[in-house]
Length: 500
Image (cartoon, rainbow, N blue to C red; front, side, top):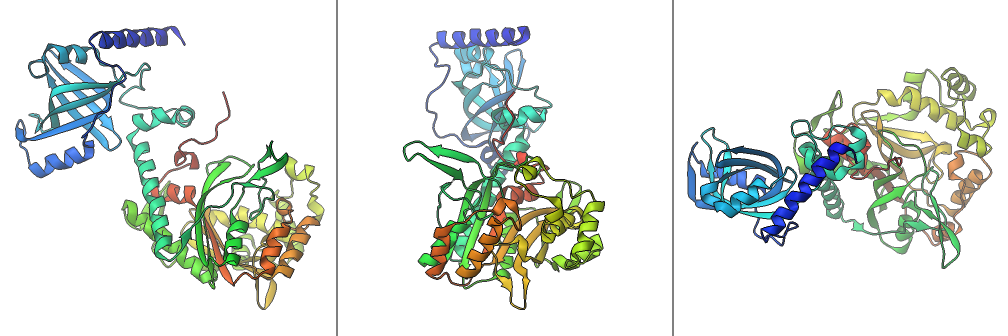
């Protein structure tokens, strides 16, 4: 600690000792019957108390962290904050007595305090709890951020989320909104007849997505395990077992990059519907967005970063090939043209991980190159909610093929504000084709991050999985969009940070 911090810390320790000397526990006790500040404010509005008046019938109890303290002779005003907002507490020495006033003199910003009193308004019409009793609830030994600007350093905000939450009310409201959105998604699928389930996070064979896994080791069984990159293959096993509509709101782990859109640990909603297909999944994407918006209010036309987004359903459908032709000027089936375009965009450069895995640019599957071109040229144009349909089959080893064109997969990705927010398939349930596509991955074709063979999953398909639609939606990106949060780290309470 620096010298200034030592001084503040020591001063707060002295006040803690002074409070303890009064016979008060500086870390408080159970404190019941507290009304949230937002509820108290709403109650005051209903009472229509006039400026400078107090309602003798409206006795309330408030509690929160002290964010502001003003002492004017024998009168003081505190601003306390709970997770619903702020409340002003008026304290006069005549009301609280010498003991209560001595406690107030030992208060610091950041301390937790409770107040009992009558509800009224000041002469400037500010809703105020006029305290006749103060209860000390917890001493803060560290000084909170400067009151007018809060905690603004982004790196510290993510590392010290516990300070960010109480310093910046907008952050608290974002995470309260996140909770409501997740609950709305859950209610939506339950209302559609889906059963919520839980599948393993530790897996002996990873799969269900094109991603690199985190690896760990189980000591007792002496076996290597992977943190799941997707629950897909286990959820499909449940379809085989007769659970016809299942969904999971789950944590996934992918050992890849970090950006404003990516965090190695993230939350996904995945659902599978027997006897459904791609069109059902589009309905579910629109339905869950509608449910999320209605849970927090604000309407379907919303601001995200500098963009105006209209989430009103139905969303337009565009084919992958049409978009590639429109924005990249190449045909999906023109392998030479795609390679030339990728080269002109500098997209043939391989990452160190790809080089280590033996990937070679000259033999890379044209579909993989096409997708790199798509990401560079098409994705930046997908601002309004859009379903991109009919992906190259080589990108989608778990997807049923188009009946009259096996090179096209019955898949869509939902885009909003240039971000992919949902991925869905008409699911592949032919075990022979599934084995063949897994085999192609193992031989080095397609996406090298999908080179795994799950024999038990093939076995499950051989027992018969009904035709089905499947969908995955990124909950973190959904919350970003609906709360106008610029980065995925703004909607994850404790995002991964490099240690200092």
